Amino acid sequence: MTASIITICILLLVGYIFDISSSKTKIPSIILLLILGWGVRQVTSLFRIPVGDLTPLLPVLGTIGLILIVLEGSLELKLDKSRLPMIGKSSLIAFIQLIVLSFTLGYAFSYFEGVSLKIGVINAIPLAIISSAIAIPSARNLISHKRDFVTYESSLSDIFGVILFNFIALHETFGMETFGLFSLQLLLLVIISFVFSVALALLLSKIKHNVKFTPIILLIILIYTISKIYHLPSLVFILLFGLFIGNLDKLNRFKIIDRLQPEILIKEVQKFKELNVEMTFLIRSLFFLLFGYLIETSELTNTDTMLWALGITVGIFILRAILLKLFKFPMESLLFMAPRGLITILLFLSIPISQTVGIANRSLIIQVIILTSLLMMYGLMNTKVETKLTEEPLEED
Image (cartoon, rainbow, N blue to C red; front, side):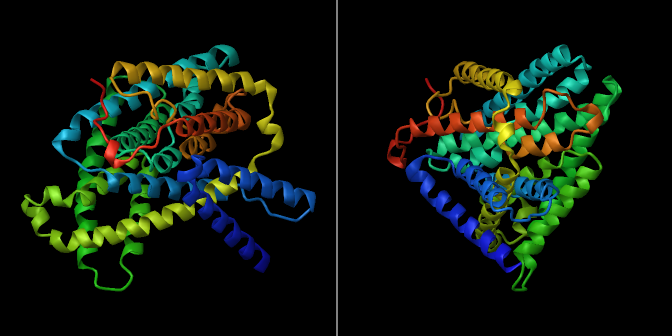
């Protein structure tokens, strides 16, 4: 037990060094964490150190990490009229990429594996989603306009992807009744999200106990999990809650916000942000260390899936280049900001065994994650140093 605690502490401290050095090296800390986790696996195998089955921990850490990462990103986003065009366009880009990649790749799986289009699409969706868990922290050194675009796009890609995955997985037929019920669920969650956001903000402003932020985070995780049980698009709640309490200064003209004592609440929200950042780093680091540890070398070098992984990766960035050009966004530093990662793994693990496709296996998932992360690293390394002095509007003329 003592050795395990020492090992975990050392690995997390090394992960912290990766995190603070990434701005200088331009190497995303996620890649280094995966390599470190894989290296630990080789050491334990070499010296035959007994380690239990850690696989069940992966979805637990992944779910908590996803909640905290989307919350962290949404807390940083500022709502004002000047950003509405960017929000709209980033939403469209995220949605179009998801739909085109999901159904194109789903058709390919269906054709080559002899399964239904529905099963093909279910297996394709995880590979079509941009990972906010990797994209958001990797974009922290970009200028604010580009960083906001990456945060909106990747967070919305996660949300759209989970909604689409659940929608297709839970329905056998897709008629007007199905879409009507889905729209009603979405409207219901938006209303619930607003009510709970106000309630949690009120709780945040009223709690006088020394421990006040941890219960809020636990309640957020609880609400997310309950919403997920009833197949509601629960990430929408996380995004709306973060946007709500992160933009209180712009909402204080409403009477209901004025009753929340925004002058006090804004200070508490800042402390809440700081705690959330710390917890996000911890959970994200543990997740990718564990995922790296669970990677088998044979999965990395699997030639049966390598051509598929290369084809999927090329398709991802060709489509992305077309959309960035079409919507007049700069290619530099944004083209390769489309990594796959945490959400891809979570959805892949949630596919029922009866609906899996032979080619869409762990090897393919790992190879696509590694390839897209390496290309993101290449893009960051070839991006000029950007500072506030060089900050410019995101959209090209």
